[in-house]
Length: 126
Image (tube, rainbow, N blue to C red):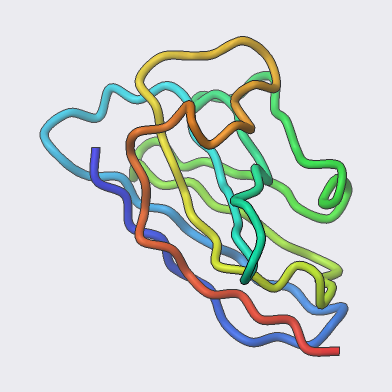
């Protein structure tokens, strides 16, 4: 599956952004979706993961209560609503997908994914 991330930008601390990820391609049989982020000099960090169709979701502790996932499976898109943004949220954000489910919160591990979007920059100014 091909993934296209969009929606990044520059926002002041306390502001909001919504990232979107659109899936396309001849095979849309993915069942697991995720968002990751990578700040300069840091490892890629799992922000959210969960089923394409809903159910159990996993968020990084650093974003719980501030970030929320939504899905529009009729358009093969999923969105990450980010509220109360902090300067430490500054990073390149990547969406990812995987065909098969993985156990529990291990879906927050980047090695679980083969399909990635190109990344979108989020910058939060203080």
